[in-house]
Length: 194
Image (cartoon, rainbow, N blue to C red; front, side, top):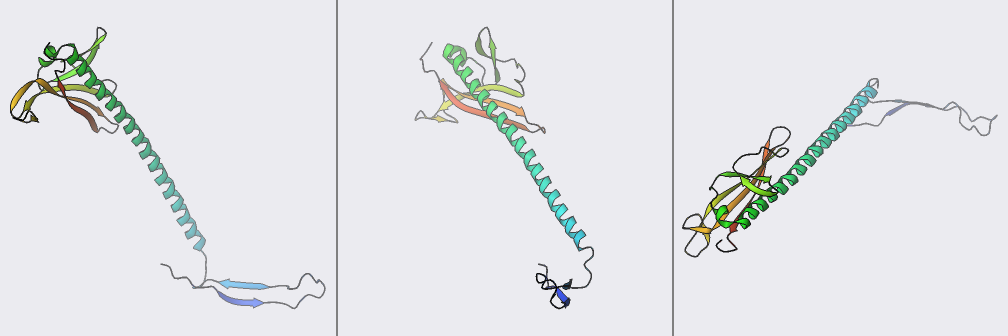
């Protein structure tokens, strides 16, 4: 913390009251103030540089905040679209299941399938259609096991009426980082055998 001293008053002089002009009571009043340590030259320059540095620093900080906010908006927008595409992929998978459990159950396990729209309906295809905009959408089914209490578990008896489904969307954000979002659910043969 800087140590400031009060200025020293070196000279103070007043002349006599003016008799000619009653409004002017004091004439020729001089007050000379010297800063501690002598001359004050250069002090204004230092203050100017400090203020200029503060203004530039504030501007740079505000600019960085604006860039960060814009990047956050883009990432949030991309995440929302990816979530919608993930939900869409899960709905396509449900649609395939609802058309025919046997066809759905016959799909290869632990293999990436891609939702495609052809002949006025959605299907799952092994052929990768490429990204939609910047998003790669895929669905993968895996086997489900039940324990002795009929609860889903990592081992036990294979359940031929249930499949675990993971719908995933991956995309690359500006700057090259890869992001993904996924939904995991279990689909069952709710309509019975078909």
